Image (cartoon, rainbow, N blue to C red; front, top):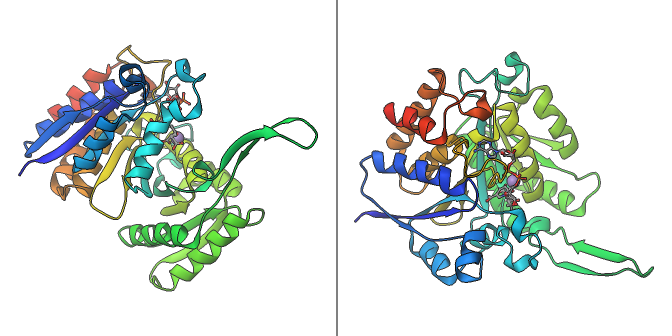
Length: 348
Ligand code: NAD
Ligand code: IPM
Ligand code: MN
């Protein structure tokens, strides 16, 4: 039986990079079938909703989802439920994809592309384990008027102990596959959600005596990421902190166009996407770096299809292309999206 891959290209550079990731998957020779559906602003234009029933149905039927990116300023005026970003949030929630793995490492040769000094950049090799279906993203939201008659907005930051425990376990398990060091990032000096987070992480740690657990406040973590990223092995953190820290980590590793992600739940199904967005400023110009999407496809093979060898081959082909000097504009070169993918395909 072939594996069904849902391809949801989305908006902006989403379709440009998703097409290259799909080409790489096709080149593996594995028994895969692809079905494509609109998502985000493209789906709003086509069907009046960012996550139409047919797209959600495809996501449910698929073994894995290859996602591009969604969003464009054209939709900023829409009510929140109809904005493109609701599609990715809805998919994560509907499919129970609570664990987001965001690996950040510097590929050999990219030292010059990093915002850090080369000798510091060279040390970054970490995974951010970001909780993905809770926190201030999914807490009660409202707009209203304050007692003083001022316009007011509210987003409830909320976690329960079960949500924290399950992502903590993913953090510990991920650490076990690597350097066995886990840094839990929170803001327990100020936030109740974070104190609960820290308490529960410490409880779960009892099951992982072989993993060295540390705790760090998120503001310090942001500073430490640029001071000495090599100190981190696995970071486990909440939805909002993980979102912000992973964009920051990407620039330590050379470009936001290099960082892939896997969104996983309790089953083998996962959603795979670059951590970047739709990049409206470069969309339609063939400038986008496809590496993050291609590396996401490798994660898809590893985590949802059990094809670790094929995933290794893709990652090695990306490393070889980079080592051979292949560079899109974000990395200081002039290859197009297609040109970069061609260089990677040549090494497969
Ligand atoms: P962004 O990640 O889209 O872009 C930030 C900057 O990085 C831009 O200058 C862009 O050109 C550059 N960049 C991003 N990806 C690149 C790539 N592959 N190659 C080269 N350069 C790249 O973030 P933003 O501008 O804050 O957001 C744009 C839209 O994307 C918004 O609507 C936002 O909500 C959405 N967004 C979606 C996702 C997602 O679909 N998962 C993620 C982040 C942002
Ligand atoms: C990401 C994005 C999303 C997030 C947005 C588009 C909802 O920034 O995947 O990192 O905040 O999770
Ligand atoms: Mn983000």
